[in-house]
Length: 501
Image: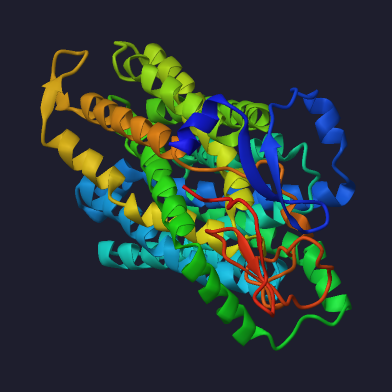
């Protein structure tokens, strides 16, 4: 297959160039630039967008993992099994795709700003509702609604943070940005270790803190400007009353890029299985509540470092190569992750495994934004991400159910649930799947998607055919799979497809 062969040769890709036109080029290796010099390329406005996007994603990760860190306490509070509590995680994941569709479409249609503000305030309210849920049924209902709110964050936050950023630092900043999820987990674990045991509110303190943080991020976004693309479009009178055109373009993208959509959704399903299998149930694996928090802190420290490092390297060796290498190395580290007989050994193995699991994840924000139809960079990546989450939603429940129905001898000689073998086998299979699926895909490293039009302005992609001028409605439509451009009279100019397989 050409895609697999290109991993070992120069890959021909199609990107959006600096003029907003689709351009065919070879994706050569780039030298690794000094990361400090890359950070200096960012303007003050770049940093503002990045920090707010990172904060939103961090709070999102914190809110979600507040449940996984409180499984044992919640099981006692609601008088249900731990498996029943993890059902709430499944529900949250199932409903995230609904939120991604709602807030992603609003983000592409009306701008990044106000959809995110509403989204973050909604999440804050649902965090309070979680703390006040007095019965198990109420708890499940609130967490299902929370999934809708949580699903809308990633697409808008990632698009906002990366679209105004210079091209060269994007790999590094993508890796740092994605680890907001791990940073949120890390913060939740620290509070679970330090504040929760001393509070009369027990695990509810995690949700009170998350509610305040979510609302504060929403307020901060109120004081930040809209995305540059939407500001320019509004200034030139191109915005307003284009909902029908937006829906028409969205339908055209689905019609012409259905293979790319399926590819992205399957990729995200594998990645979400990867993360949820290796982290959601691990705190219950031969750990006390305090040990679980310490182990989580260590693992997520490795994740934060790995995301930044692998994201940075992907700018040089390519997005797909970075993902494949990380997945393979993660699989090789499984024995060190599940076999040690001491808490210290298990924590060290978890650090290294999460370095590569989340290292591969660090490439995903920029990889999906580059593969996305440029005008749909809130909705396309966000929906693909959350559909993948929906597919992988039973991961924690499956791991818990299988582990607790199969007992093995623990390091103390007592029978214990088989979390180690279950998670080890599952992770090996998933890592292999990620390596294979990524190898048969494509990438568009270096794409200047920030130069594309916003959705609803007469072009399904946001990019223009070579020679066409921006701004203004396009007279061209693009077949995203075949890579051809058709003008009003039917003339065709052929360009290699970004996602041809």
